[in-house]
Amino acid sequence: MIVRCGTIVIKNKILLSKECLEIPDQGITLIRGKNGAGKTLLVKKILSECKRDSIMAAMVDQSNSMILRRESVLVNIAMSYDKDTQEKVKSKIEELGLTDLLSRKASTLSGGEKRIIMLFRELLSKSVLLIIDEPTNDLSEKWCNIVVELMKQYAKDNSIIIVSHDEAFIALADRIFAVKDGEVERVF
Image 1 (cartoon, one colour):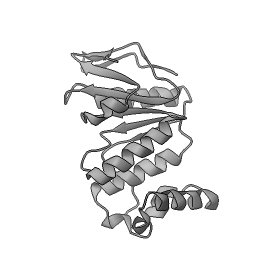
Image 2 (cartoon, rainbow, N blue to C red):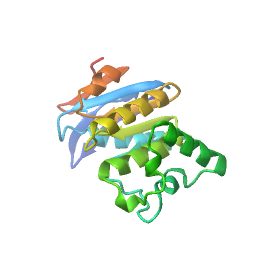
Image 3 (cartoon, rainbow, N blue to C red):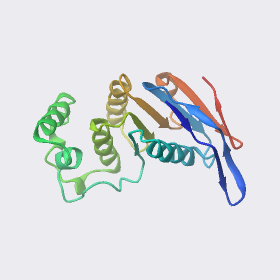
């Protein structure tokens, strides 16, 4: 899929200049750059362009704002899915050895665990493009490994854009873009 980003201008200053990015229908695209370079702004623009072009896309960021604190983990992950899908969610969580999470209330979870819930929810959605901003921030090594495995599985049939400083994602990426000095360039 080709996402037409155009130039992003804020307060009469060109922040990012790129006519379009080619994002394949499958695989992992990594976007790297220093803090404040415009990575998050770029992916938010990509998300809005996808929605404008009726491309099913979703974003998981670091805010954890889409968590229902009084509900269980299972409800938070599978709340908009039918019973069959909820059973698949339970099965996948059990397969990953995370059964103890199912009945816990979201209010008892750490920030990293909440991010895992949001990631699970989006991986089950019908989105063909999933954008994840700093997926491994604040996660233990165990959770990082789980997140990486889930993303690899999802990327076999869909596309993921990862915004991260984590060097581990370089080896996973099928393509890498760098945001620097107001430009987006393909590195690999």
